[in-house]
Amino acid sequence: MLIRILLSTIILLTPALSFAATSSNGVDVNMFILGCNDNAICEPLSGEDVNSCPLDCTVITPPPPPPSNFSGPAAPYSGGGYFSPATYTSFEITPGDNYAVFTWTTDNNTINTFSWGETPDYEFGSMSEVTYHKNHSVKIQGLKPGVDYYYKITTQDASGATLVKDGTYRLPVSEDHTPPSNPSAFYAQQRQQDVLLTWKNPKELDFKNVLIVRSPYGYPQSGLEGKIVYEGKGNYVLDSDTQIDATYYYTIFAYDEVSNRSSGAIARIKIVAPGSPIPSNSTVPPITGEVTASSTLSLIDFDFSQRGRGISFLQDVVPVNSADAITVSLAREKVPKNVKYIVLTLKDEVPWNSYLFSDNFDKTTSETSIAALERVGVVAFELNIAYQGSDSVTKIEGYFKTTSLQPQLGEKRVSFWENFLKLTHIYRGILLIVLLIIIIIILGIIRHKKDKRAML
Image 1 (cartoon, helix red, strand yellow):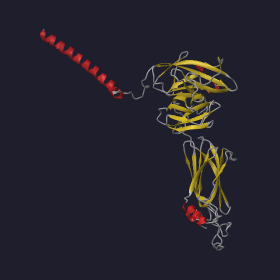
Image 2 (cartoon, helix red, strand yellow):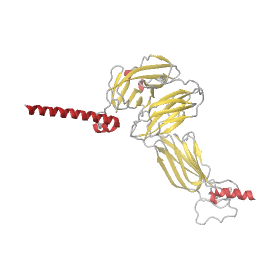
Image 3 (cartoon, helix red, strand yellow):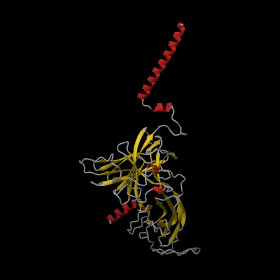
Image 4 (tube, helix red, strand yellow):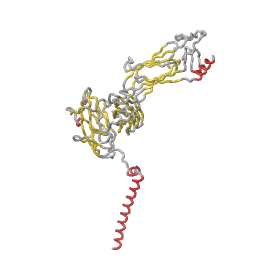
């Protein structure tokens, strides 16, 4: 008896719990557990009532008959009496970047199943709540703007009566289809048995976050092609879920505020046993194989642009402004049908920086965008093309010739004073001393001329 009293006291003091479940098809469902423990004791302080916990709160005494003015279909429940069928009292869909949140309420406590898909067959699956309540919400991830999605909500009350609400929803299409430039300086380094990933975020004002995806089979070309290692605005992460002798392929994507995604920067690493020499991947091409010459593609087939303006170039030297991001694209009709990857690699810094190509919004080109080079000189690059079911790799080489660090025409130019304030205290001091010496020399020359005229 004492044990039963203690258990009842613990149960009464236990608050209602809330859990979130995520399915593999991208549906997040909030499931509210109201503390029903099926112990044959009705415990209102734990959120139990006849609707949320009918096994514990079954009505024993016969209830009165339904009122004479009751016009709806009376539905008996297991404890006797009558239960008014549930109705929806509110329903709302809130769009996000690439998701939508469905929220609705019912006038009685109900349990709900949400189904969805791109067809009326709801092929993406279903998710169900686990207990009865009045407030319900579902978050669907991975929606594509402009695509119609079918949804169906099946609502059931404690009597077993069901109610269905279905329809279609389309995520609004944004007018902005330009993704941010790819993160730069993306490197993978072994630390003991872990992998330290570092990178620099793009500088676009609408940059939102990065997403890093890992695969043991090849470079992920979307967020669905591997394990998500990191998502956020940081510039490093430690991947600890690794195994000795395994090779991992990483892709980092950048997203903007309306979920435009960059094509991806890539890195790979093979994990060696602690204490073993760590091989250097600093100057290894991101894709390897038998290098072959392409009979159909050359550098002239690729287009280069900055700020939406095409760049004219001669042979293999592409002049660029080092203050702007660079977009490199290949018309879709020129992309080989059996292509696996197209990768651009910058070779002027160690380790090399490599970037995947992917289709643009209109699927008219396959392209990549790299951050502003921010240095003056010649930057060697190469384009590597890998093919499905083949070990051959096509390599095309070229050079970026950076001509200026000044902004393009129409941009605000930085004043001398702004540049001066960016200098360190030492350089400011040196500059001021030089200016003072120049002023003294000029004043000396002027005074000498005056003295000479006075002597005459």
